[in-house]
Image 1 (cartoon, rainbow, N blue to C red):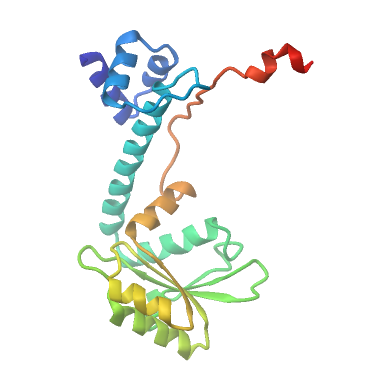
Image 2: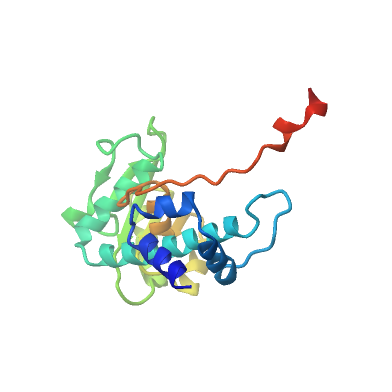
Length: 221
């Protein structure tokens, strides 16, 4: 229905009016969601299809956010990207703080863009390579250069992050070598950014609740 389309448009624009629509759903909205986002019914749920529709809408919005984040990252400088990667890893719990992390790519250090502690005590170090590529996949030669840079430092652990993706030969190469190398492609990168609130902010939070059947079960008292 036209009403349903208007609601989705408002949702996409982060309109605050959407809160009232969802808290007081109209029959035509429910009908639109059930027709366009069908899901299997859950016998224990009071919202058998609408709940699944919310999940579907959320995933579509998240997919759009992934695309926008990649576009914005690719429009920035390599230095910005290297700093972003360090910030993300710190938010994920590595290194303790930004002050403890080190960005070395700016100075032209061959093959290494950053160094971060694996834990707050610094028992081991993780070396980082960040490639902001708009086109093409990262191949085996780039990974070999990174591994060579690790060997020069007697390092065993590294993270190679790109806004692009990796060729099959690059992935196979990393799986066969002794060094512990983690590969993170563009989609994985922005998914982590969303999960750890780097470069994004929350607009609205909605809770979908159901009746607690145990609460109303007098036989358990």
